[in-house]
Length: 500
Image: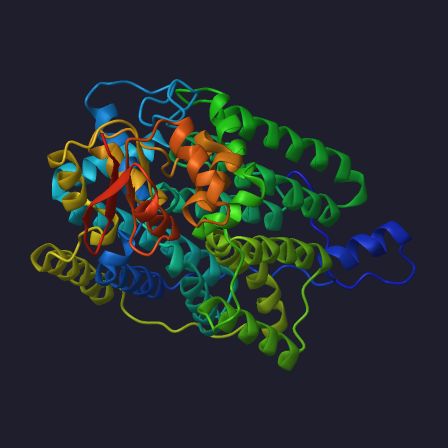
C-alpha cells in the first residue's frame, strides 16, 4: 500500500529552497515505469553463469576457508551443537568464538554429503546463478534489454574473482533480494515489505554481510523521504527508521542471538592487519585487472554520453566504490548494488525502447538442458577438487612418522585443512578469533620482517614443529636455527621439528 506521494517532473524556480534542494539530490525526472520482463534473458544470463561457474570449479574451491566451513557444518549435522569457545587452535583455546555462519556451513556439508566436492561446487554455482537471475530481472524491469545486458556483463566480470565456495556466496541471493526489495519500495513510494524480515533472519544465519543490508536502510530511507511530498516526509522518516530497527531485531533471531552481530563487527575490527589477508587488501593497479577495465570503461561511457546520476545516488555509488577499492572482497557488493543504483538513471536518459519478444518454452527447455548437461559433465570430469597446494597431506604424514609432537606453527593457508585433520592450529581463517594484532605478528614472523617475532612465537607457544609453505622466509632461518631440523620438504609444504 502506498503511504506517500513520489515527486516527479522539473521543479520550478518558485518552489521553496528545501524543495529545490530535495529535487536536486534525488533527480529532477520521475522514475521510469516498470517494464515487462523478458524471462528468456533472465534464464540466459543465469544458466550461462551457472555453466561458467561449473567450468571454473577448481577456482571456486581455491580457498583454505572452505575446509573449515565444511568441518563445522559436518559437526553441527553430527549433533555436536553450536560452538561457543575455540577448541580448534592451540593459541586461543577457550576464547569466545561462535559459528555465526552456521546455516551456510550446514548447507555446504549437506551438499558435500550428497555429491562430495562436486556437490559443494553445484551449490555455490546455483547460488551465484540465482543471485544474477534476480538481479537481471530487476535490471530488465527498469531498462531496455541492451543496456541491461551490458550492466549484467560488467557486474558478472566484477563478481567472478570472489566467487568461492564459501558462505558469502551462499548468502548472495539474500543480499540481492533484500537490496531489490528496498530499492523497489523507495522507487514505488512505499515502505519496504514486512516479508523482508524473514529474509533478514535467513541472511543473518547465512553470513555476516547482513550488516550491509541493515546499513542500506539509511541512504534509501533518506532518498525515499526526499522523494515524498513535504507533508509526508516525517512519516516516511519514521517508517523507514522503524523498519531498520525491525531488521536489526530480525537479525538477532539466531542461535547466538545478538552475539552474531557483535561477531560480524569483530571481523571489521582487524585494523591494518586486514591488508595481510588477500580478500581484505586494496585493489592493485600495478597490472591491468578486470576491475580496472570495468571501472575505466564505465567512466569513459559516462563522459562520452553525458550521463548524470542524482547526487544521493552518486554519493552512495562513490561509497560503494570506496569499499571496492579498499577491499577486494567488496567488488561483488559494488557490482550488485551498482546495477540497482544506475539502472533507473540510465532508463530515464535513454527513454523507452522496444522489447525483444519470442517464445519462452524453448528457452526454458534449453536452460534446463544446459543445467543438466553442465552438472553431469562436472560430476564425470572430476575437476571439482580443492587446490592441492592447500592440503599438505604428505607433509603431515611425514611429521607424524618422524614423531613430531607439540603445538604446530602453521602457514595461514594450511589452517583450514588442519582443523579437518584434528590438528590444533596456530592460526586459521577465523580472523575474528585471532584478531589483527596476532595476525600481524604471525605474518611478520614468517616473512622475517621481524626475525625476533619468530623466536618469540616459537618460545611463547612452545612450538614443537612447523608446517610452512615453500618459499616462506622463515624456512631459511629455521634451517640454521640451533635446536631445529628439517624433516620433510615437498612442493606443498616444508616441515621442521625441534631436536629432542
